[in-house]
Amino acid sequence: MTPADRDLLRDVVPPRPSEPGPCPTADDLVAHARGETPERSALLDRHLESCAPCVLAFETIRDDIASADALPTAASLRRVVTTSLGQWLRELSEFELPEAPLVAARGAGDDDALEEALSHYRDGRLSPAIELFRRATSEDEADGSAPYFLGTCLVERRDLLEGVDWLREATRREPRLAEYRWQLAQALLLLEQGEDARDELRRCARLPGARRDAAREMLARLESRLDI
Image 1 (tube, rainbow, N blue to C red):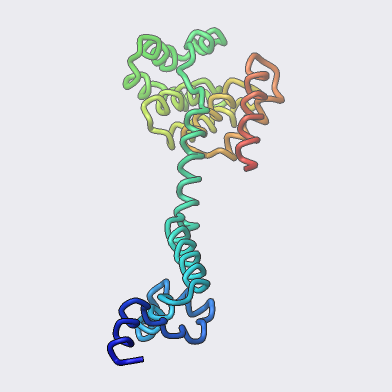
Image 2 (tube, one colour; image 1 turned 45 degrees about the vertical axis):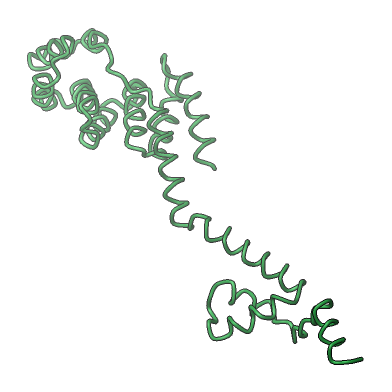
């Protein structure tokens, strides 16, 4: 074969690629995919140019790393779950302003401050009603109606923490009134305090009155969500 023939053959048949050499370990491929071994990058890249099994393994590892990096961290997942649960609790709440005459009919009208407060309340004037309800809370410390309406007004005005405190006071004074416990549970849901709301709903569900069935139904929904 003449030199001219060899040159012609070289043009027609490409040279055989060099052998890829020893395959890297899985740890080497992971480190390379993460860019943790820059000093070996060129060598590994040359190997991947000529070793199909290692190319397949490297691409799989790189895809897995990309997927893992896209996942939220445990801390961010906890924030998402907490936010989602809090919103769910607020939406579960059936808080509303009760009708004042229901309590006034129990004899609360004997107290001037309370009766005047209820009059403002019925007319939707919450600010003067709140001040008078505050005064009325000390007139009869066995009566829970003043703290009940005071707490309700404060919650309606979104003074949730103080409102819950006064609703708790109402249940302390008259623990057998289911309406007080129901209202406290609804306010606690607005505060995203699911476990405390559950406790109040349990108490409410054991008491006689129109709220018993509603309390049991809401309690079942709440317990199923809190158990997740």
